[in-house]
Length: 81
Image (cartoon, rainbow, N blue to C red; front, side, top):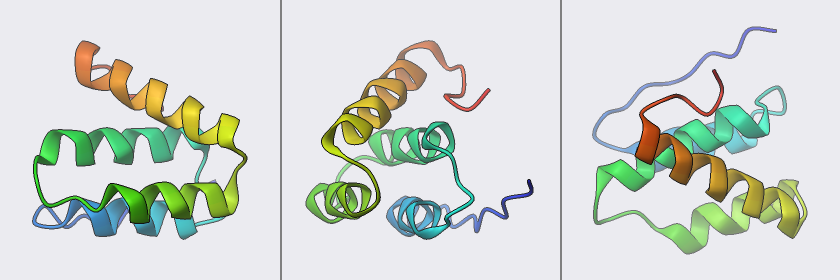
């Protein structure tokens, strides 16, 4: 599987929403994008991102993504590695 990531350093939120919309993107890949948003700082519309995730996964999926993203921000190791 090949996932094309549209990299937009000025808008990590768009990157994350694009990944969520991509049906080939895994939860681990989405978690890595979510981690990028966490590192991006203010301006991220978390309600919009979380709603998009919940549109694709159950609440347990959102929790999985948040935990993996947090781990990535702490360890520096990509969630999808």
